[in-house]
Structures are given as C-alpha cells and as structure tokens.
Length: 157
Image 1 (cartoon, one colour):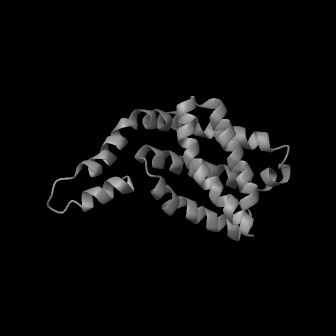
Image 2: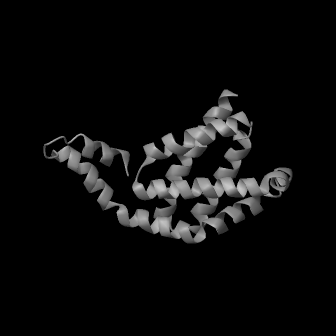
C-alpha cells in the first residue's frame, strides 16, 4: 500500500483523520483511473516494449546484448513490472526504498550502471512512443527515479 496512506492509517490511534490527512486519500482516488489504465497497458505490452528496446540497442551495444541479452531482458522486465506496481499503488517512496536502491547497488558493484542507464533511458523513449501520453508520463516518472539513481552512482565512480 502507498506509504503515505499506511502512515495516515497507523497514526490515527483512536481519532478521526483531519482534513490534511484525508487529502492523501483524495489524491490517491482522484488519479486511480489513469494509474490503472497505465498498469493494464504495461501488463499487456511490457514484454514487447522491452524487446523493442533491446533490438534498438543491438547496433550500439551489440556485444552487451549478445553476452547479457537474456539477463537484460529479465532485469528490465522486472524493473518495469515493479515500477508498474508501485505506480498503481502511487508509491514512489516504496519504489525507491524497495527496488531502486537495491538495483543501484548491484549495478554499481558490477560496474554496469552507465550501460544500464542507456538501456533504461531507451526503454523510457519506447514507452513515450508507444503508450498514451498521460500513461507514459506516469510510468516514466518511476523510471526517471531509477535512471537518476544510476546517473548519480555513475557520476560518483
């Protein structure tokens, strides 16, 4: 569940929520339809978008695709699935805490953050080209959190 919603529910402790606490629920409900639409689109088309991304990158990253194509497909599919679930829950904080930091550390340890950054940026481009605009912007917010984490780690190295 959304971290803000969960926090509000656990902080109630025998009282009614105040208006500002209720606003979190209103926001969650107000954009649910677009989040669900984006989630359903990804549910149906994510594999195809990941494969399109890998095909486009074959010319510029042929060796990486040949050596690690199956792992790239697996990891990109996992990140996209987790981003879609986090988007559905409207939970950017949970996405960062539960996936982004973990993947950031793994990719940094493997020294693959810069290469992965390019792959995920291309995935964002594919999403922008193929998904309806509002849905693409919504899921790309999550993928931007991911790519920014890779770019920061890459800048440190």
